[in-house]
Amino acid sequence: PATAAVTPGLATSPAPSRLPAPSPSPLVATGISVDAIFGQGPDLSKIRTARKVTLVVTGDVIPARNTNEQMLRRNNFHWPFEATSDYLHSGDIEFINLEAPLFSTCKASPTGMSFCGDPRFIDGLVYAGVSVANLSNNHLTNFGPVGTNSTEKLLTDHQIQPSGLGLIARLTVKGVRFAFLGFNGVGTAVPRAEMQREIALARPTADVVVVQFHWGKEYVLTPQSTNDAIAPDDPREIGHLAIDDGADLVIGNHPHAVQGVETYKGKLITYAHGNFVFDQMWTPDPGQEDPRNGVVGKYTFVDGKLAAVEYKPTRIYEYGQPRFLAGPYADYVLGLMKTSSQLIAAGTTESPPSPPVPAPQ
Image (cartoon, rainbow, N blue to C red; front, side):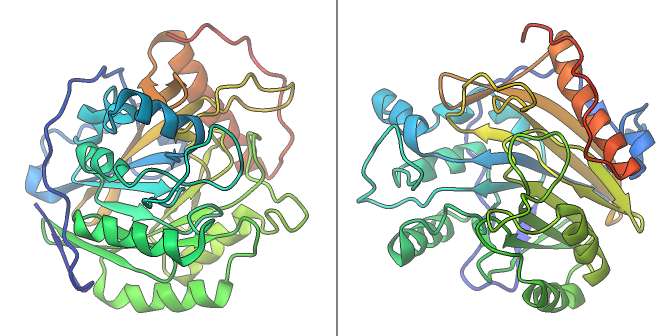
């Protein structure tokens, strides 16, 4: 079992009840080579469970706007996770990006770009089995200290560790010490000196340092800067710097699109898991990626080293509930990840012609 360490007053989440969820065949990887990630995965079945630790990572979780109203109308704050809960609980640790503050005076609205959510959404996070929530993004601080402080207290009171905003979450699972950090690069530049300082602070007492970034241009297949103040940093440059500074695994979010992965100095950089819980259900314009799609990543460590990766594709329904995909459309989403990874390896942002899009199943 996971145990909290270092950060006072924090612990891992309890084991809530679970609902069954569909389980399409995952894409499995061996080691951390891109070719292996999109090929035949390793057989870890003969490795003792005591040596394996699995980390489940979602895309953006934004309990605001229509998603918040859907939960209020149903009076059910578990609802966004009911189709995926079983798989979310299959890991030893679950790491999300929480992109809306939760506080009692949040005014429900289906529109707007200042995001907030009902504090009862914390029950959904507990139900989903969340262990760590990254808070470093461009919306968690939309309502200033009132929203931020309320969110941090709700999380810690419910045994979910916050990371980012200067906080380092620490968990020990089966003797492997994990540290989780987060940094925002949307509406601001990633603070490079602070990134180096925090990774150096986490490194001596962690076997695995996981760093999540909020970065990059929206609705595109490959990691890119916006070349302006909106997302000024090149995600590839920042991801490489994080590895140089001592990170073991880099997690990317924000583009509202599924993007590929890259290996650098033997470590894995993931650029975007897409949306997970959110209300973006519009049809994309030509040249844009579909914001309804996402992936849930499972990262398996053996003896503290990343040994396997699998991705399960999801799609948003009813303005806030992700459901697992299967069949040709699931293959299509994973194919986008593979294509993006190939483009990243080639050092280009030019997207090839879009393949035919099958109907979601």
